[in-house]
Image: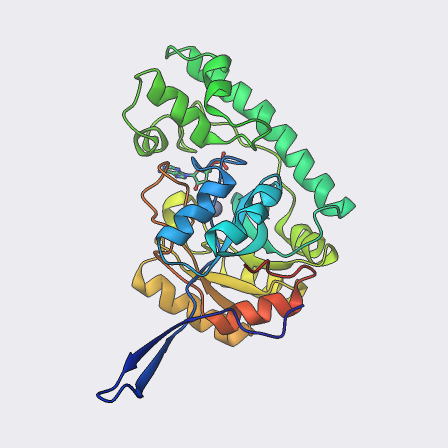
Length: 311
Ligand code: AMP
Ligand code: ZN
């Protein structure tokens, strides 16, 4: 565990006689939510760090869906890019309510990638994501010129498969113009082609992340455009189970939602993060468009099993 805050950048200006007139210290810029081709991003893991460097970030977390497969390549890119790496993942989970199940994405930071319980859950989800993608492809193939091979062609080796890969195959087949159009139409949960996939209960996933030495942070808790969101009571119950933080600053939250979540995080003693949810060219989200305060990363690193990998 490190005792130093992430590095910032210093700009010194020479005074009239060459003395140091002023020193301005800019805080490090930290983005804690990105995806690579290990799941549904379009950049390689190294490419994510290169993009982070290009955007002037000092620290980036790689948080592919239900996998840590991109960690090694990303770690190798720390020295050449000068960007520090937070090893993470975005765990697919579900909260079951009387009105049906709600998909909740749980960011996990700095956990043991070999932890048996967390690994088994991620493997089970990844397996079922594959079955689900095949079933969705079969349904889509009834109406559109789409084959399973088209989907595989869009999916990185050993990547966690998701609807974005189906979207890319539909774009390549000329059925839609963009991922966005596919999500707004045939890939939407309300569409008849949609099939859900297995995901562990959020409560169990929080415990599994903690058991693996990780720091669990709920991704975009108020992103209503993606589907139903969880209640404040549910977030409070998860906080009691060990949830560490809320991703408040995210492009899918409007100002009122951010204010509400920031207030809730304060009441519950949860960390507040801000991140881009960058997916390369697959989404409009620009890397570094939202950032996390350095003191929050210090807290995450103190609680996490692994260190941040610094250049
Ligand atoms: P899945 O996990 O397979 O159900 O697909 C959800 C993934 O699709 C998440 O990573 C989202 O970030 C991504 N996603 C959701 N909406 C869109 C969109 N309009 N364009 C591109 N990607 C999206
Ligand atoms: Zn994400």
